[in-house]
Amino acid sequence: MNDSYLNFVNSPFGARLARSLGLPKPEVLHRYRADRPEFDGLIAIGAGREPHLLDALANLVASVGMTSVAHESAGLWVPLANRHGLMTGRFEPAESGSHGKLTALLFDASGIEDSSQLEPLHGFFHDTLRSLGKCGRIIVLGRPPETCATPRQWTAQRALEGLTRSLGKEARRGITANLVYVEQGAENGIEATLRFFLSPRSAYVSGQVVRVGVRAGADALQALDWNQPLAGRRAVVTGAARGIGASIASVLAAEGAHVIGIDIPSAREALDSTMRQLNGTALAFDIAAPEAPAQIAAALDEQGVDIVVHNAGITKDKTIAKMTDAAWQSVIDINLSAQERIDDALLAAGILRDGGRIIGVSSISGIAGNLGQTNYAASKAGVIGRVQSMAPHLRARGITINAVAPGFIETQMTAKIPLTIREAGRRMNSMSQGGQPVDVAQTIAWLAHPGSAGVSGQIVRVCGQSLIGA
Ligand SMILES: NC(=O)c1ccc[n+]([C@@H]2O[C@H](COP(=O)([O-])OP(=O)(O)OC[C@H]3O[C@@H](n4cnc5c(N)ncnc54)[C@H](O)[C@@H]3O)[C@@H](O)[C@H]2O)c1
Image (tube, rainbow, N blue to C red; front, side, top):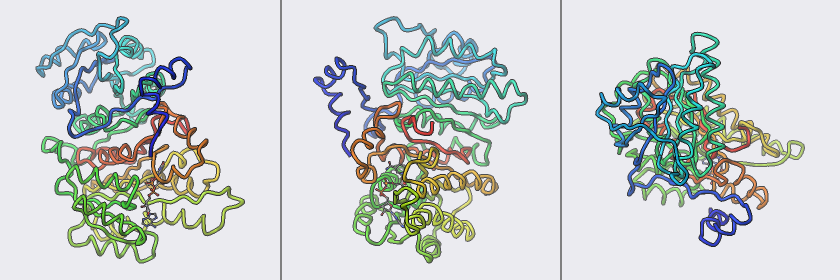
């Protein structure tokens, strides 16, 4: 869908008018394009006391071919960078007029054990934030507070959340800020996650906190193909005929997966056309039909499947006093119970292979609740519960389960919202705009990545840091 305000304020006349009237000017976000370099420019790196992740950061910078400069807070970084043959130089704080020198700011806060040691975060971001260019990236790295040895360490690590989310709200200009908590021992399994948060693929993901844990398979990263990471894998996507589902199918196929798209029989034509373009397979099933799990299992059985994306979803909005039983039931059934039944069938028969991925599509409505959406919000909160409850059970088989929670995404679903509510939904986030289906799809592709074996039980909002439920 078209955001005419964003287009207008990014035209020369509109930009002048917005400036003179003091209107917000949403940035045209830099999104991933196969014909442009994914990573370029200069990264500034800072660190607190005894940082544990500098090796992993050095590997990342070398692997993506970017250049780094050390901030004085990262005294340890310089010898380490020299060891890795990376160019370093002392970073000079922005003079007026030198905005936009940097494309990313990374801070290793993993060694901070006490609130009194948080000061280097202030020093680093104070000196560097104004030099970060449009659509720049901020990544803070820490240790999961709940794994910390002492209450003081837990407290200091938890403080990173407030800092990171505030940076996202202050930075604006299409800049994202995210926090990655790395469990001790998972240091070698963070590259896929850091690449995602550094890349234009995460254009609409900001203010998020992600945990990377130790998982079987996380060591096999050397063998990863970063261009076609899903080559040889099979992915099921429900609701693939249009909107976000069609975009998920397209991104997974571009990463090398064979996609099996499922949608209701009445959407068969659109589904066939989407799948034909991707050399995928179309299955016209109503996922909520009682026979659907067995039919889907039978259709997949011979070759199995590696990735299941539960995207199909509907809304039937009414305040609860006016909501019919049928409207309640169909939303819960399609958005939540059908996923449980399908997963049960695929897991019981081993059709979803060990090391596989399950990814649900929740919503910020499932986090914050929403007027007129008791059924929808219940179903989407249930998706979150499912992720959290299933993750430990699936761990032994190396299967991860995560969900994305989109905010306002420009689709046919949101085009139906009345204009004033739609305009408010679009603007009430740090990016002052709605997201695109591809933003959700790219986040799902990261969760589906073989290098995301340590990411499980996570809910990642794709909402431009929406104020709703933040
Ligand atoms: N658009 C947004 O802003 C937004 C925000 C938060 C969450 N979401 C979620 O993202 C997902 C996709 O949303 P969208 O905006 O692309 O919606 P959409 O209505 O454009 O597409 C949904 C697809 O699911 C299919 N579907 C519905 N019921 C089905 C069933 N019983 N069996 C098989 N397929 C079925 C539809 O035919 C359609 O192709 C949904 O789960 C939705 O709740 C969307």
